[in-house]
Image (cartoon, rainbow, N blue to C red; front, side):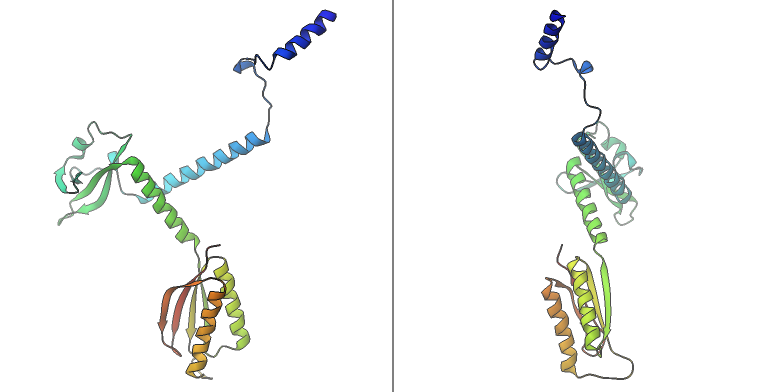
Length: 231
């Protein structure tokens, strides 16, 4: 019995020094940090896959997708040569590092053949992803419209200005439409100009800026668009 205890202690002592082979090592069934890493990887893979699919839908044909019998080619000097057969261009082509991309599907006076170019694959990829990100940003930026008349009551003006500032603080664009009232009360030009100044002052308070210059004339239909500061 004494020998057994001694052997057990010896095995425990040498275990950190001589680890078991990979196939025999005992790993915990669940580890929070490993689960978080796996989750992050899955999200990254899904994002990349979605981005690739989005780029593929919006781009022009390339490589073997180009079905035209002949193409015009922009050479290394930037000059257009051809028309050439795509099959000859793609023979022994370095698909790993290069891309044979379509620049225009209908080039020339007759527009019969596409205009193509050989580009670095990495450069093409970066350009496409940058373009996709810009499109996504534009989709995310919402434009809100606030309408009022030149004879707006002070309380209503305060309410609309408060709403405008809330939208701008969220990074939205706000289109302001000031319209004349068809019938009834008419105000003086200085009072109308004061309304426009109140709008500008409210925009400046939240760090907004004029995106499109004011269009129209005082006491007529006036339209101006402001952009909020990025949150």
